[in-house]
Length: 504
Image (cartoon, rainbow, N blue to C red; front, side, top):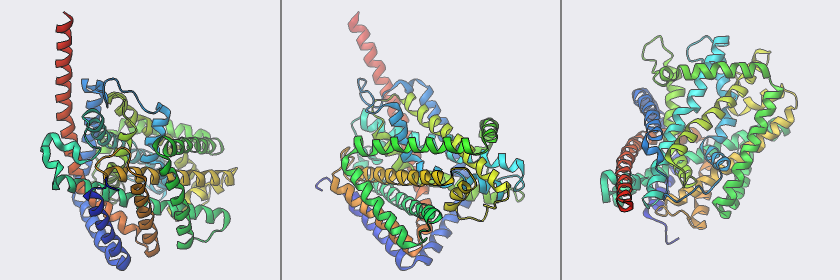
């Protein structure tokens, strides 16, 4: 515990205050944070759209330029994990549980309830729903995650800086990042990570509860959700105790096996030909219109501004709030890879998998809905299981889905305790187990308390609010990384010239 820094205590105090507010006055907390969130989404939507699009361009520039040859670590370093395991780890920490939670529900909502531009329930709306979902889970968020992780990995493994968000901005602010300003940056990152993961744990518990209710009649409510969180907490703490190379590695590989298995089953027993045809067409439509979709702000009265604010801009703020957690975890498992390999893999591999996932589950959900089973009024966590009810092997599909949600659930919590431990012990790559244990209990406690008082929405609002100041930090991180890469390339060229002269 000697390694714990001020960041740990300050953030813990802020979290305690926010949770206390949410428990004592849940309605007032939700109203206040909801109003602030609505103001941000309405008035800063243009900013989020421009920022996310710009980050894609910057990430491609770093990957395809001569900077792409620079290795994240010493020139002699090589990756700690095989490429399949590495991809499974970054994917599990990044968006895993969200794919199961929203895999059928989001395309269905865009198709049957609130399409971006088309009439609900039409064939055009179905295509539109898939294309829009690909935008929210594809290249733009993964490019943003990639740049965050790049900054952290470069400074940590190439420049021997601590694995902290504040350390990535030293080329701009110098030693000021070792003082109060650096602490403020790291506190914001830890706060966003802790609350983001706590809300994810809450939503995961709700969906597991929904699945158990659907299959076995387990009553939906706080007692069951508390039991689920308790069991998962014990499991992810056992995993966290075993270390990065064992617990998270094995869990991530398990996640990918279960996810691929569930995906294959859905493609086989669902409307196979329609899935493959819609995937092919909407994949092309998505990339053909990616620029227009990325900048769609719906500024006029005849546009569907509610969709843009409620989905696209909300997602951009949500993903930015998750970037400290996801970026730091991806950085930690990526030592030894070149910038080009690192960025291109992060941007395109999860994107293509996500697109095929949503094409499969979204098309199947729309097919079930059109066949006479109205899914549009169901809670999000129940849509997937009601879709499975209309397919062959429905019980097997639901059981695999519950196992997958649970596995993603454990992996996300395990990864978060590891990342929170790093951020609150001055960037230690091996945070003490006691620190990870404390963060694990804190995350689960936040989720359980807020489920008890119905305050998960307020916490989600809080994370969206925290995303605005962190977006400025993200811009500074990218600029700082660019400055450092320029210096590093110049140093490498000077070394190469010196070596040529010596050889002569």
